[in-house]
Image (cartoon, rainbow, N blue to C red; front, top):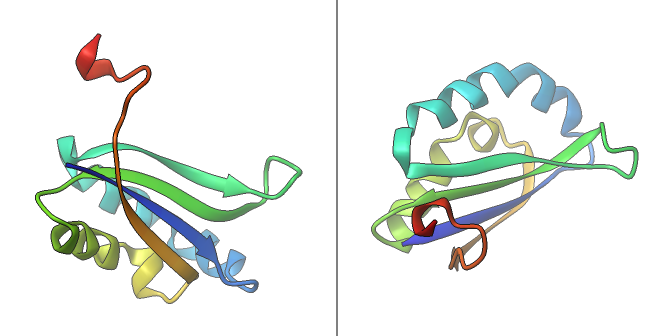
Length: 97
């Protein structure tokens, strides 16, 4: 089952994001095929990062929560909120091409 992590940074999260970004990217890459896609939300300028969208495949909500909690951004306390929702990839799903 797919789960979307919708993460919003704390207002003062940008310095943490910049510091932890290499660890975060390495963590995401370590997920292998479980990671379907990911990327940052930005301010209106299209550059200044202020959140994250991560979609993973996991056996359960609890397993997905474990993946989210293992992210170096989450461990550093960067997020104000993390919403984890089951998600169905209906359009442009490469597995159904």
